[in-house]
View 1 (cartoon, rainbow, N blue to C red):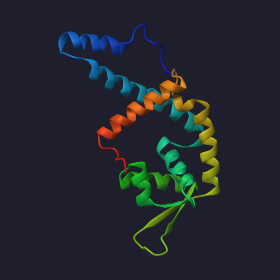
View 2 (tube, rainbow, N blue to C red; view 1 turned 90 degrees about the vertical axis):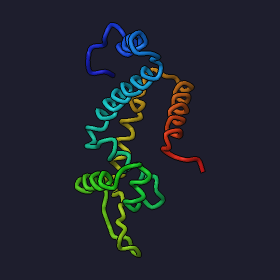
View 3 (cartoon, rainbow, N blue to C red; view 1 turned 180 degrees about the horizontal axis):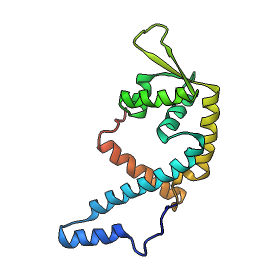
View 4 (cartoon, one colour; view 1 turned 45 degrees about the vertical axis):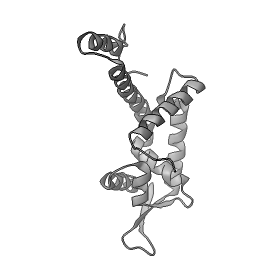
Length: 169
């Protein structure tokens, strides 16, 4: 999965040992550094799978969100909330998707302040093909069995909950 030659040792483990020897407890530093490195690995795999489809992960997520909506249409504000993005980022994503004819913008019929985004048939087809590409590589997550993947998801969800990323209702 990595684009370079693997090192003959784990550099994060080595850094943790040096940290432990020179600074203090290294468990949190090693965990965070591992998460950050895994994020780079996953991002690289996902980018490579989506590139042939002309999508970034952010644009792919927007298409999936629209596919999951009841009518294939959502207000831009709701898209931003669900994707946890700043309004400017949502605008940029929608601009690119619209330029590629994957979504259309329209005015809300009863609220002039609201812009609706609707996925096109081309957008549905692109999302479907990109989903096949991502699921074929398990979104780049390798080396874990189903139980371990569930455990990882649960642990990362706890970190997100504790950081205030969402609340249980």
